[in-house]
Structure formats: C-alpha cells, structure tokens
Image (cartoon, rainbow, N blue to C red):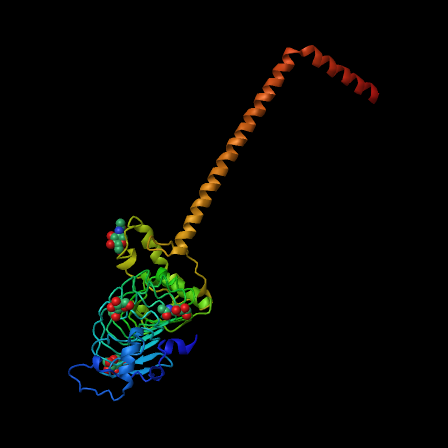
Length: 389
Ligand SMILES: *[C@@H]1O[C@H](CO)[C@@H](O)[C@H](O)[C@H]1NC(C)=O
Ligand SMILES: *[C@@H]1O[C@H](CO)[C@@H](O)[C@H](O)[C@H]1NC(C)=O
Ligand SMILES: *[C@@H]1O[C@H](CO)[C@@H](O)[C@H](O)[C@H]1NC(C)=O
Ligand SMILES: *[C@@H]1O[C@H](CO)[C@@H](O)[C@H](O)[C@H]1NC(C)=O
C-alpha cells in the first residue's frame, strides 16, 4: 500500500507537504489544560488548504506518526475518546486511560482503522454499533477492562479481525452468534473472566482460529460444557492451541483440565436429556443444569479416554449457518429419495399387475383355442420322441 498517498493529504502546496508532525492545534485544546501556542506559521497554511482533507489533525497531547498512521493517546488519564482522530488513522492506541464509557459514534468515521487498543481502561459496556464502521479492523484489544456483557452483533462488520483480546474482564457468558462473521480470527483470548460455560455453536464459525486462551475462569465441568469439550477435541485435532481449561466445579473435578476428563463422565447427561426430552425450550437453562453429577467412576486409563463412546444428541439450540445448510441439504435429499422410492414401488406394482394380467390373458387364450395349441404341442413331442429314439 502506498504510504505517501494516505500519509500526506493531497494538498499540493510545498509548505503543507512538510506538515507531517501532526502538531497539536489550538482548536482541540481542553479548557482545563494549559493553552498551547502554535509556533509554526505553517498552521495557517494547513488550515486554509488542507483542512478539507481532514487527514492531518492530531488529537491534543496525543502522539501521531504520519508514516505509520498511528495515533497514540496512551497513559494520558483521558476519560473520553478524542473526537478529532484523523479518518485515515490505521492504528489507534488508547491504553492506560480512564475511559469508562463510549459514545456509539466514537469510531464512526475510522473505516481505515486496522488496530485498536483500548486495554487497561474501565469500560463496562460497549454500545452495540461501536465497531460497525471498522471494516478494516484486524486487531482489537480490550484487555483489562470491566466488560460484563457483549452484544451478539458487536463484531458483525469486523470481518477481517485476526486478533481479539477480551482477557481480564467480567464476562460471564459469550452470546451465541457473536463470532459468526469472524472467519479470519486466528487468536482469541477469554482468559481471566467469569465464564462458567461455553457453547459449542458459538465457536464453530471460527474456522481459522489457531490459538484460544480460556484459562483462569470458574469453569463448571458439567453437562453444559460437554458439547464444548467435543469442540475442543476437534480444535486440538486440527492443530489449534488451547491453554488450560481447569474445572472449578464439581468438587470431584476441581483443578482438573476438562480435556483430561474422560467422556464417560458425561454419560449421565444423555440420560437426563432422555428423561425430559420434552423441554425443547431450553434457551436459558439446559436440561441437566441442576442434575447432580454422577459419582465419579474410578479413573480410566488415558488410552481409553479418547474414544467418545456415547453419541450425545444435539440440542435444539442456535445453529450456525453451515449446520443449518447441511440440515437443509439432508431434508431435500430425503424428500428426493422418498419420491424416487415411491416411483419405484409404483413401477414395480404396475409391472406385477401387468405381468399377472398378461399371464391370465394367455391362459384364457389357450383355453379358447385348445385344439390348435394342443395338436402343435403333440406333434412337437412326437418329433422329439422319434428323434431321441
Ligand atoms: C463522520 O463523517 C461525516 C461526513 O464525512 C460527518 O458528517 C460526521 O460528522 C462525522 N462523524 C464524526 C463522529 O466525526
Ligand atoms: C480497507 O482495506 C482495503 C484493502 O486493504 C482498502 O482497499 C480499503 O480502501 C480500506 N478501506 C478504507 C476505508 O480505508
Ligand atoms: C488493569 O488496569 C488497571 C487500571 O488501568 C491497572 O491499574 C492494572 O495494573 C491493570 N492490570 C493488569 C493485570 O494489567
Ligand atoms: C428437565 O430438566 C430440568 C432441569 O434439570 C428440570 O427442571 C425439569 O423438571 C425436567 N423436566 C422433566 C419433564 O423432567
């Protein structure tokens, strides 16, 4: 990508071209801060000729680098996002500040942004549309905030996202569907949150994922986590790296890595499900929520624990697009096969009826002309007998 074109506005005046330092301008001073004296006379030039490009302002007291198109507002004790971030900014760093809330429009004009770092702030909620315009975002750091919940559609448009850090927050659950559009995501951290369980279908769209961090969460290794264990096994099988998922509950499994818990420990889940298969409306509480876990069997040897002997039925929950499509294909194939089968049965029946009718017809034909048929037969028999003799 040509650096110069994006780095410097299309202002052709020589003086303006030197305007690469992104010197803070008077307009963006905060009233409580000491006035800043713009010494450069170029400022006037820039304001008059280049302002229309809106490319080269640098938010007050932030550091800007016009080569890398990086705006760094870290560690300034700021409690709000500057409103004058240049629209061609590729990297925006806002670490170690006092940010506790974000207006919905905070990043609305930054569609060139590739890297956004809001780590070490005090965010507790993110507006649903906050990242809507960041279509080129590849790295999003939200480490060490106080985020307690995420909206399902939060990452709908950030389809190029490669790296997402949500560690050290207060997340108690990850909504289904939030990762549906992140097929490019390679690195994801959910470390140090309050997660007790994860849903398998939430993670299935992450087809490029290579590394997942889930450590330091109060995992409940019960039926709710069983399907996710299947996903983890598949993820490890295709080479994904996962840190430790250590169980906190039930007591018998405390401190054990979920991946090392044999699948047989979850057999009771299927039984519970069978017992009340009538509860299809299990959006909030999966059936085996309150069921006490079966008494732990003596540990099986590591060799036997790999084979998932029980096929657990899929629950009627949110399904990703691929699964829905696959189900559609199966249904269509079933219908077509059914039609073909019916046609074959009809054809066979028709054939049988036709054959029996023809046989009957021939028999009756013979009865009506007994002499001709019989004499011919006798003649032939006599010929055969004579030839044998
Ligand atoms: C974004 O840009 C549009 C037009 O380019 C402008 O009207 C709007 O005020 C900008 N929004 C923000 C938050 O800067
Ligand atoms: C996003 O990235 C693509 C490809 O790198 C580029 O063509 C496009 O201009 C970028 N969008 C913006 C708004 O910068
Ligand atoms: C998290 O952020 C707070 C406030 O910014 C800071 O004091 C603390 O050291 C950070 N913790 C970690 C583990 O980074
Ligand atoms: C199904 O399981 C749930 C949760 O364990 C329980 O509350 C409910 O009573 C059960 N329903 C039936 C029909 O057994």
